[in-house]
Amino acid sequence: MGTYFSSSEERAEQAIHDMGENTRLEIDALRCLTQAGCSSSPALLGWKRETQSNTDWVPGGYIEYILMERMPGVRPPPYWQPMAQEERDRLLKAFKEAYLECMACGRVHLDEGTRNLIWDDKAGKCYIIDWEDSLETTAEDTWEDRLYSNYLLQWD
Image 1 (cartoon, rainbow, N blue to C red):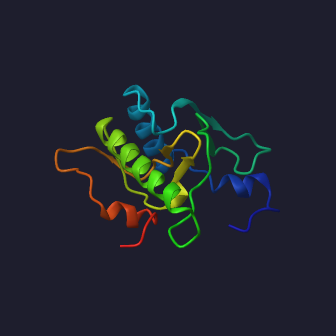
Image 2 (image 1 turned 90 degrees about the vertical axis):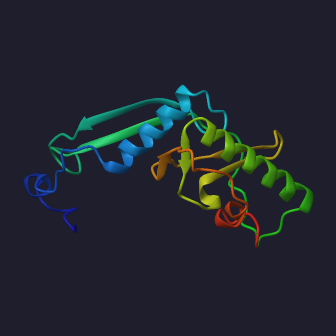
Image 3 (image 1 turned 30 degrees about the horizontal axis):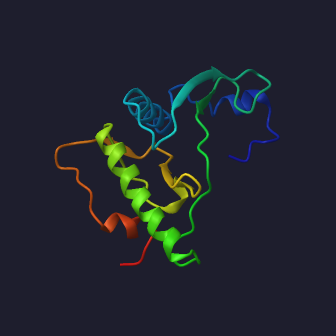
């Protein structure tokens, strides 16, 4: 850290050569959901891993890119911000449908919060994004209404 003005040789000492765990988890989850035809998460379009050159930030280190579908809509407001009750009800219904679809497609999303949701009011569709913190679905996984408050969509 703090090596912005250091020589490339010094910066190269920071190089990590293994794929980042969060990147691998995100790719695995998106691949699973995409192959299952999930309409409630972004489709994985591709990914790339490159080794940085001597003129890059961390020579010899890696840089990773993930290309995924851009979902229409905006991040929904948390429960304490104003939203018409009719729209809030539509959002809650769409969120539950999205969560259940993702579970049916093989993944349980664990990074709870509105920051990982996209709300398309016109289509009445909710999308779940940011999948590096997720698990494969098991027989024990079920919908629970507490997820509304866990994702900050409503107060208990």
